[in-house]
Image (cartoon, rainbow, N blue to C red):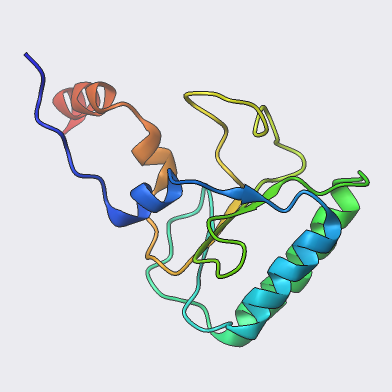
Length: 146
């Protein structure tokens, strides 16, 4: 007997959707320019920290873009980027940024790929680490300690 389908939060649906890589550095530059052109209304989520419940102001987003760009170029010493993904590169609403020091198999197929280091989104985030835990494990944990 199958259990009824559980509707996932809009953030998770978007996060699990289709993304396109900024494979080359000029593609990343173009993506940053699109975000800089519309800097209002973005959540900036560092995975491992509590998800933010408010958007950052435009100055904070612009500062984050400048800082993360420097970090990526310094620590991902390759002639290609390939670690930043946007849901719609022409008009992004979610951007996943993988940490160059924790890539795992982000490029390959996996049922359980590594989480990005940071996510920019126009949708309020949920705790991705908690959402990643299988429902059966959550129920087991809640039965023990809930």
